[in-house]
Length: 523
Image (cartoon, rainbow, N blue to C red; front, side):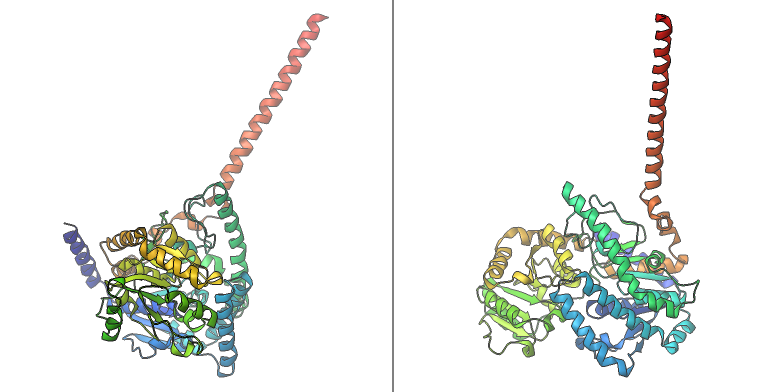
């Protein structure tokens, strides 16, 4: 019955899509790594749904594995001026190292926003690109909410836009009305949804702190706004995201804590899912050597893999040598220290088919940096996790992984071979982790529509209806004191105190009157 219902739903959405005229959609990708991969996937999905897609791409962010891509949609590339390229590229590398090894301290994040503000300035100065985009007269802009510059481009074009959040829900702190702080943890708090009194105190204080830090971060774009928007029509960045027609969140309730969602917020975690393919024979031969012990997959993300230090590689290699499993590790030969001997049960490769290996029946553990896409892929295939979070959203993602018993987190600053090996053995041997991973897999697979189907059906819906005004709650327009009912609270408090004051005054007057009457009688 459920499969029949799913088929009817899919058929309905397909029929609805056929009735729609193709829309002109602009996708914007000015951030690298997983942001670029996700926006490329979104562009492919929208193109496959019959829309005319154009992608605005910052050429510098194209990753090596994707340089040979020939997308079927139009791509508009922009480059930095030649005299600026070396200087800015060196700054990018330095900031990346600071983010990874400095644990995303606030002053580093401010420098990152300042850097992206400068890049945005270069983009908006390209009058040829901006005028071309204006003349295209797009029906909709699809942007990455972490990419502040894409918001300014959408505002410059004066077009409706859809916002894509590439990470967990709690990162949606961009001035949007919040879910209750009593059980929805603030991003960077390190808390779960089960908070005691002091946890709620911490959550509230972190909320105040991050609100102030966010204002400081977005102020790094003030010069860009002043240069490219006329006085009187300059946008307020903290208000721009409230204008999004839809919010797509790259997550799933298999990972997230349960919380309220507004009607225009949709989970689409798992967009990168693809059909599983047989793995290459050389990898199959390596895995078969370890029989029932199986193998461990190690992939720490493209950026982290390039910046692993000799000490980290040495400790990890020594830990892997203590496992009975084989280990497949994404690590470039060029990054491997010459004085470190590769453990006999370890095979390193520049690239591994991650999805196909996660689906392999002999996999026992996934060692990851805790990136959103990697964690979603592990959930997709029911594989337990040991996370080594480096920076940005990774520590917060691993909080959820641990809370759901999907795995264990280990800090890079304290990573030593002995404890790392013990942690991996615990997650492999303790059946509760595998059970929790399989339960999350069931939740993840139970949706009647795939993430891609959910995305295109909602896009088609707002194209048909001319926007999502009917989905946006009035709270988006309320000032914060109204949203949190502070005006009502203060009114009732004042009314109560005023009533008490009046009551006391009446009692005092009555007391004085009665005292006066008694004195008269005595006389």
